[in-house]
Image (cartoon, rainbow, N blue to C red):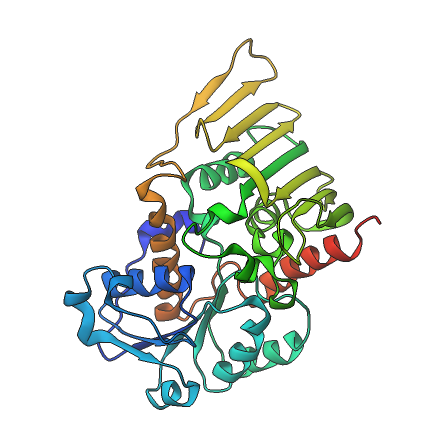
Length: 349
């Protein structure tokens, strides 16, 4: 089932279903609130934090009887969750996934799957043995411009794709202005942070749209004055299995926040950026640019940005309900992680 087919599916989670959220940082809070607002499930939160309060939940008074908070994993297991969202530090994703998979719990694992290939073979065997539904977070596959670009590429409007340029620039201290960015997992190498893994969104949708990566040349490292131990820039040139040349730039130190795609093919050129937020197409036989309509579009800096997370949630829960393999399932995400690790390990010195 593809993201574009979402409207054909309806999901329902019964009140008796319990969803476990492992970790309660910004993405854990987002998933918890979306589950509370879009299902009837109980939400159980596992966190080391001692200071979680009602202000972190939307309309807490409506949902307080469906919220449980624990600091102990064993207490959570006694509640027998049917689904778990693993949203803690990247370096701990696989440890918790292994524990929960052995207990027959379906899994949503926030991106990236891990920061290494360690124990992934063991996890895959358990997933297969227990017939689990496992999906790794890929919210940009549910963002209208990316969905439309994939549709355009699949329909061969650009002909054979020859060149792709993709950029994601942001300033890490601005991500969560009220928090100390130096303590965030994104800033810390030992927790699986760094721009290559934390901003794996681009690599995910590039592989989703243009296919598996066959060759890589990269420079990855810490180059800015940010107080981080992980990489703050990743720039690489890759070749896909379809011989598309892909240039990828990711960084943690740029203002303003900016994303863009430029795709050149034998029949024309397509561009999108997060400022204009429209898709422009120049056909090989045209003399001007044409704007391609994007249904239900919204800017990444606007209030509607949560919609792609809601659609991602709906899609995943539909797959759980129907026992249907999702996109960006465990095996697909392993290949994307392997590519990210190769980009880091093959970096020029």
